[in-house]
Image (tube, rainbow over all chains, first blue to last red; front, side, top):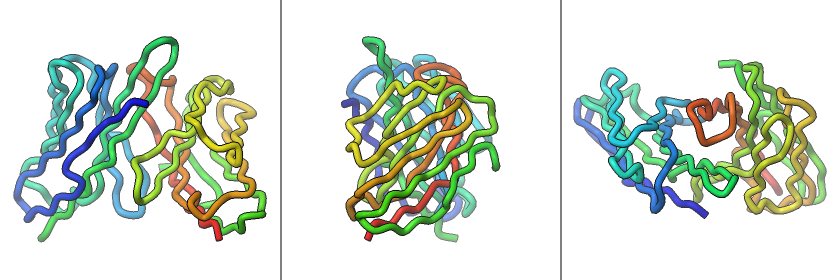
Amino acid sequence: GQQVMQIPQYQHVQEGEDFTTYCNSSTTLSNIQWYKQRPGGHPVFLIQLVKSGEVKKQKRLTFQFGEAKKNSSLHITATQTTDVGTYFCAGAYSGAGSYQLTFGKGTKLSVIP
Amino acid sequence: ETGVTQTPRHLVMGMTNKKSLKCEQHLGHNAMYWYKQSAKKPLELMFVYNFKEQTENNSVPSRFSPECPNSSHLFLHLHTLQPEDSALYLCASSQDPPPGLTDTQYFGPGTRLTVL
């Protein structure tokens, strides 16, 4: 099946530092989505990227979709303690009448006050 | 958030028990999903339903049996589970199934399942 590799698995940052997580797919994606899961919570949708080379911003969060639609990144500027959680990417694939949504393993972010 | 609800929130069962997980979405969505989230693996998509019809079954063992009586309700029937099936089971819904602009997943709070 399709795989989405996400790195790093863990990231510890000092409050105020930046943070980036990366996702890579071996095949071209139809779209990629990003989710955040707080400790003890469930994944919550952040954003969806569809177009090649797309860049979207949400306050301190910047999301990018690669030109080949095989990779994506999430960058957080000046992290805050409220950013703590696990960030997942999910790649959507289509082909031959079927479709899949494959999640990366997630990057667990810890922010040291 | 109350768009997608799941019951029970916690479940402990023996390997010979039969139990069911329930999910309900109040968002008017057409697609519903079951996911398994365990500590050592990525979020795993188990089943996809589109307009009550099962469209995906990602090689899930037959001891997991889904049921979707209508677009708003989804069940996961459990029978003779193994300890390695212990995990968080998440239900989700989306306007439409992937891929597309309306396949954003809205997750429920999950059922924490422990199999003894």
